[in-house]
Length: 216
Image (tube, rainbow, N blue to C red; front, side, top):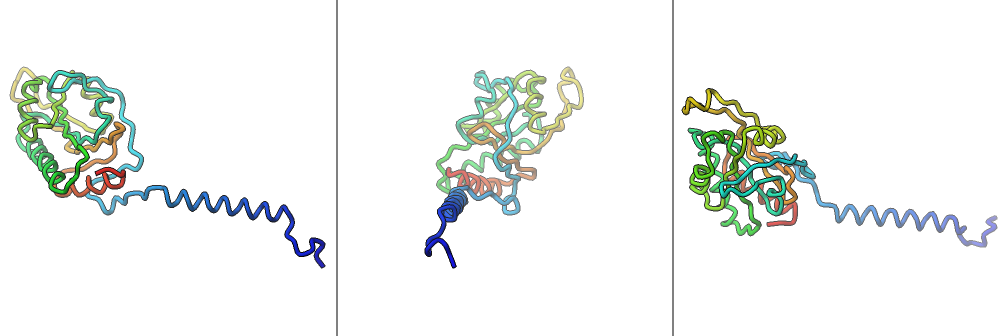
């Protein structure tokens, strides 16, 4: 026969209340936590949480300092190349220009800018970069600097480039990684897109990623 007169012990009540509180907090967190993006549903590779980018010191085609802080505040599609590139670079830049039009047609108001970082600063002056990048989209930005400084950013983002010939030759080529890198407004690497690049595929991924981050 119970000694509690049909009443539950205070300890039992306290434990039950604590369990209910924990369950409520867990359920609330589960509801509020954003769902992760499934890379199987994307053309590119999404990096959950993003990846920090090292400090670097470059300059844009308007001769303004371009640093890690310059990547903050808006979404950026970053591509490494050179203006003398005969195929991959102009084709990629053409597709990135089309991405801007697709996003506008889809009613996406979140700015997504294009940034072209040269791996051939010996020939790609700021004037040459300006003429090149704005030919694909007036809002695109060209970036240059000393080759050693460019390499700081390139190595950090996994972009390899090899020059075939010496600057004095004037007619050398440069092999380089062709990935397009998506930088989020916090200045972190959020996703990457491997060649061949297609505006429709990049745009579709961007719309999903922006929606995942509550933007668009």
